Image 1 (tube, one colour):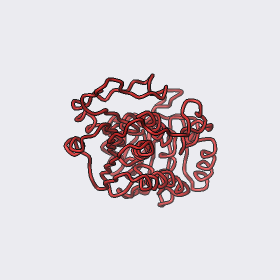
Image 2 (tube, rainbow, N blue to C red):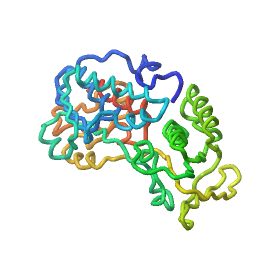
Image 3 (tube, rainbow, N blue to C red):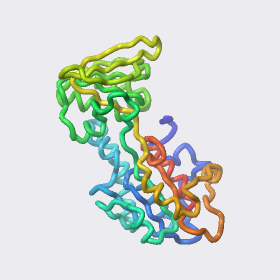
Image 4 (cartoon, rainbow, N blue to C red):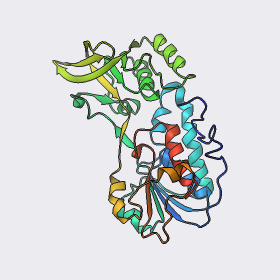
Length: 319
């Protein structure tokens, strides 16, 4: 993320195009939000602050989405304050938050919404990899859903917080860790204030750092795993034998609800990007036959916290 911007408040640095103030809506609408991660929370907050009636569905028993996982990783625990604040704002604004309730088509349509915002997030992107069935993902490690082996290779294709935090957690749990990555230095997209902290921690915790590698495949090698890499600069093939491989490549959208709702929507789920960037309402036809349907955050494509919140603020401030 560009250091001029705030991870929590996307209006900072964009005051001319995205003012801090949120104006009241000309007419009250019923807005249904599916998903309680940062994108869904911000969509609900902005919509409610404009005077709309808002219902938010969250399939799990708590709000925060991936931010809750990020906050579990050592020195970044304060990142949870972002979604904690959003959750408190929803309570203050009277948003109807329905935890442990998965939004399905029938439940959404039964509310007779004027607007539906799908913020159902994503799932770890693994299936591109030959041998992905032998690998674990960062979420599994941070949530302690899988045991940690003695020797772990983590491959990070993005260079942001998730892979770096996972490498720290693995080392803290006693593993001998090698962090291989496509960039020239570890955690290079985590921000200019953050990556030196990660690097210091990696050195102190004995994490081996290996730059400029692209993971090609993972296969069984007896009781262990063999990871095959190509060097990004030379093309030379390199191999590692290890006990466990963890892969970080962002997420792929969970958008099945969005697809099921498109036929009942008046806009087929489409977003007019020019109107979005100009701060104008999306649908101008009157009357609208059905509800407006949009998706935000990781339900569109893999996002960081800042971009997920930015998605929702741009969209909802003109609903």
